[in-house]
View 1 (cartoon, rainbow, N blue to C red):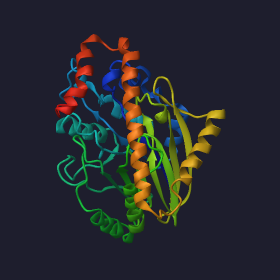
View 2: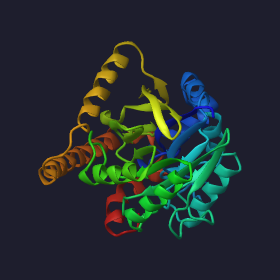
View 3: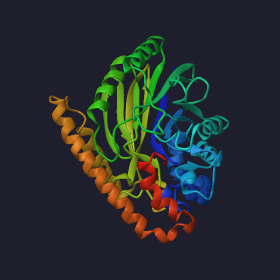
Length: 364
C-alpha cells in the first residue's frame, strides 16, 4: 500500500474582523483571488493526499447585513470555499469557538458551500449541523481508510463545544485503529497567544495518542506551539494562523506541517515556516527570517518534550502568562483601532465602539 502524505495548516479565517471591515482578510481575498496564498505554498499543499485546516469563520451570505459591523465580523463570503479548494485544502474542521458566531443557518450554509466544492468537512454532526456530538468523517485513499475527527474544547458562547467524555472518544479511536484505519484528530483547544500548551492540552494529547491516534493537530492559540513525536505518532499542539487578519506580532508567522504515514505510523515529518504579509497573505519564509523561525520552532518543540513532574506549578506559571498576554493584546487592539480608525467606513464606528458593552451584555 502506498504511503499517505498529509499536510496540516492552522486557523483559516476568511472574513474581516470588526475593526478592519473593508481592509481585512475578506477584502484582500476579494482583491487577490486565487493568488492570495503564495503559489509556492499552494504547490506544496497540492503535493499531499490530504490537506487539513481549521476554518474559523462562516462562509455564507445567509442573514448578512452590510450595514452592521456585527454581521460582517469574521464572516467570509461563499466564494471563499472555492478559494480554499483552489489553495489545495481538501479537508477542514469546523468545530471551533467561532463557527456559530452568526447563528446556525450561516454555519450550516458554510458546510454546504464547502461540500459542494469537494471539501471534506469534519467537526459537524451526522446531519451536517451543530446540534449533537461531532461525527467521524472518512476518506479512502489508495484503499486505505482515514478516519478524521474534529472537536472543540473551548466552552464559549459561539463554540460548537464537545460535551462528551474524552474516554468515550478514546474508545472510538481504539476501535478505529484495530480495524486498520489511520486516525487523525483535529482539536480546538488551549489559550490564545501563548507559546506552549496548557496542562489540559498535554493530558488530552497523551490520552488520544495512547488510544491510537496517528496525528493530533491543534489550533486556537493563533501561535505555533511545539510538536512532539513518539512511537510513530505526533501531536502538533498548535499550528498557528494560516490565514487571519491579525495585527499581533506573536501571530505574524506559522507553519505548514508535512508528514508521511505508512502502516498507521508517521515515518517522517517536517515543518515549513510561513509568514504573514502586510496584506495578511501567507508567504514562504526566506533567508534570515527562515533561519530565525527554524530556531524558534526548535525552541518551542523543546518546551513540550519533558515529562511534567509538577503539573500544578506548570499550570500556575502558564495561567499567569496567559493573563499577561491577554492584557497586552487588548491594549494593542485599541491602539490599533485608534491608529487606523480612518480606514473604516463611518457607518461601522458605532458598532466598533459599542462592542465592549455589547459583549458584556451578551449581545455580541
